[in-house]
Amino acid sequence: MLQIATPEARRAQAKAAKDEGNDLVRAGKKKVEALRKYEKGMRLLGLPMYELDEEGVKALAAMSQEDRELLSVLASNAAQMYMDPENKQLSKAIDRCNVAVDANPANAKAYFRRATAALEHAGNVAKGSDAILARGQQDVRRFLQLDPGSAAGLSLQKKLTRTRQAML
Image 1: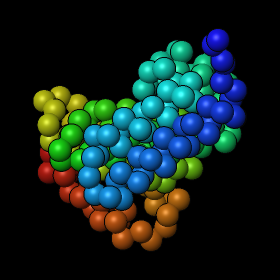
Image 2: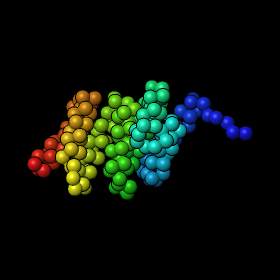
Image 3: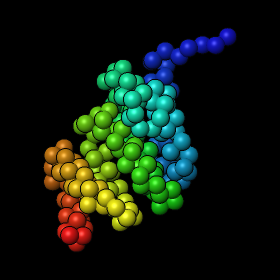
Image 4: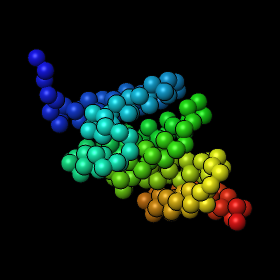
């Protein structure tokens, strides 16, 4: 007999997937497996794709605040895994950060990660690098509003500015 999971059960499963992913990262290994856990959690919360297309926007709008915050953490953590040197896929990292920010605009880590991915990604694209860096600068400014005085944020801001000025 097929059972339909309640929203609470899906949230608990998504949280468990997040915790399992975090444990894998803390152990310092199996980051690809941690990524699978984070993305499984995103699916459990009702995000069938990993970006906010029309269906994703509807799914996000239907979520509770608690689910949106959990989705934001899952997406931000997935982004971090896509930034790992062993699995570097910067455009996917940026996509996951977009989901994280859309789900929870107060997720400072998502802005920082998106700005970091933008800095790295801008050097890998033939066109549009200035726009990518400009977005990165916006993100690091927002991050610094949420986490004023962060040394890492201030350093990233300087790197983005220097890189963008060097391109002009």
